[in-house]
Length: 426
Image (cartoon, rainbow, N blue to C red; front, side):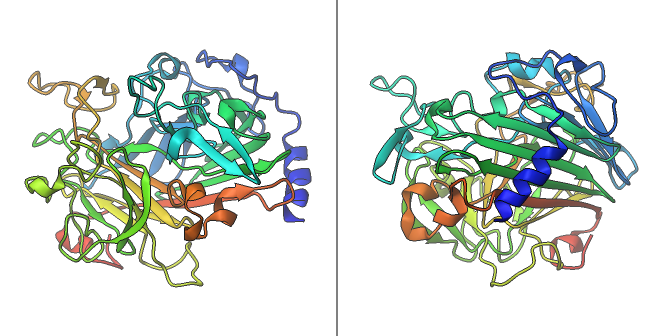
């Protein structure tokens, strides 16, 4: 019933917006964006600007992506702390660096064997991950396939001074997924906060849905004169005492592993730097075959019932002692993916708002381990592991309530180590 009421009321309010045209690309102009609320379009770089108290950000229609996020550090210097491109048109051109700040969908993270059986019918999704000679396209599907949601142009349906809403209609059969899905993503800036609300409605058939936000963070704005990396960032996952076991290509095995205290994956007992264990040879393979670092799905073990919006303890805290910028993540999602950017190789250029402009010895690129990706989401590949009980969280029919993801990114300034120790800091 809620889904039907929501559909009528919300869709009526945005019915005047031009629907997304499958396959269109973003040109960096206002010609292909219909906007409700504030009539202003994107700037000369194709970016929509919103602002709050002590925070401002730019978003683009391609992938419903965040492109810039500006925060003043403890010295009062403004830092742009997310990865992206200077001009929106380049997102559609560059195929080497996907998912920068976008919304992966219709199913985030990996799907084993690029297939799924539902009610006796097998659906084959378009593969795009881990290619082999026998399967040059890949053996699994990552972030919705080669033309997933963060590869497509969304429609801007609302834009105010502090908020922007994007919409996407994903047709039946796209990338092999059954049924049409209509989705809305709203970003709102408050008092040093960035709030996210994602809603997706299955309109014609039962289908898997799982979304996320795929933002690349460097809380120094790549301007730390001591290091170009994010390994100096401290990470705390107070509820992350367990993680999903994966094989060498990061497909879940079905097992749940304990993150033993003081082990490589222990970020729950106390905060530690992302790079704290990088000299430990046991970290090799932790993020897949011949990979050193992190690309792991941690489980948020919170006692039910809980209100994710309140309390002092986030599901994740990322902090840089150099800039003093601290990010606390609150969410209604039950898992949390951490990626230490081991796949970056120095080919991704920094934006003009980032990096050291007066140091020729420092390449203006994102180097390996130069960022951290934090992904609020549900259990990866939960559709292939029914024993986890994720069915109602990941499988949706037209008569069901809509899929909903909510998160609040709350920023603070803290130039002391005390801020890493727990609640009440920052």
